[in-house]
Image (cartoon, rainbow, N blue to C red; front, top):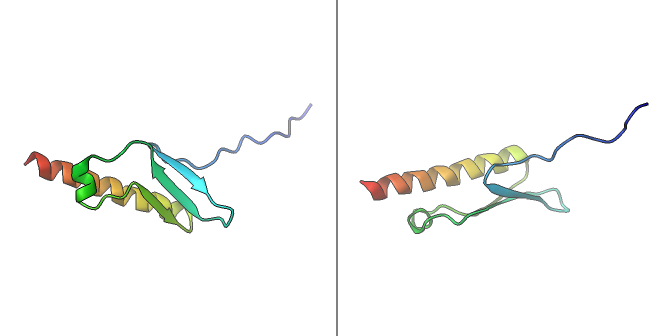
Length: 75
């Protein structure tokens, strides 16, 4: 007996909700708000891109901005 059900999983980014529009555009929305210091430093809680790889890179940049803002606040 053969089971034809797909076990393919959708791409994921930990800590972010991923949405793929009807047009195929990728959106990522952070599950938890960034701290105010991160927002003031320019971290964006929502990013979009044409491909999963691009949206993953955009998320990484926002997380880096938030991390840098947190380190700057601690100094």
